[in-house]
Image 1: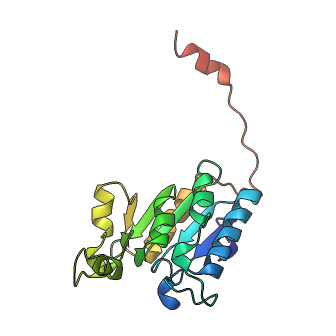
Image 2: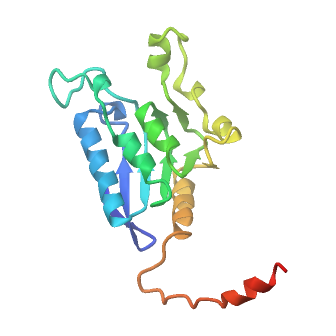
Image 3: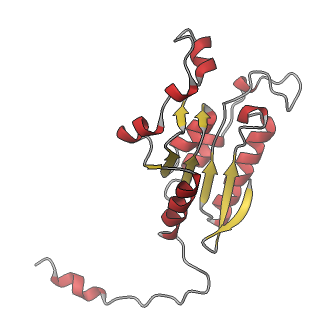
Length: 195
């Protein structure tokens, strides 16, 4: 997570690594997300989110005796408040549940690989809530099904295509710093279109 260049434009990149404590979210994770969102807001930078993994840790490993489920966090509110201010794109390429799914869902565009899944609750939450037993992660919010209902905007075949699509999306909002300014067209012509 940090600031990097995409298409010669600075962007905030938020990455959630599913191989680190299953991509679950703790106190420091949210502090990092909040700081990234703050930087994007202050510097008007586009945001690329790579959300994977689970949600909050019932017992936070970042701070002893802290119950993350009881935290009152502004992460999602602040991220959502950037709507219309900066482009926000999520690239989902694996299992994306709970808090990571909330960030993805609040993005302007969600690009998901065909093999990815997105759900507000994963198999453990489904079973713990008494909603089902033996549910596989792949059965919870497959990207192709979520595209049919509009929760996923674009389904990519793989990570490479997903990244290419995100770069193309961002290119509609950003220009290279050394590009010459465009010449404004004569707007008076528009006045003649409608009598």
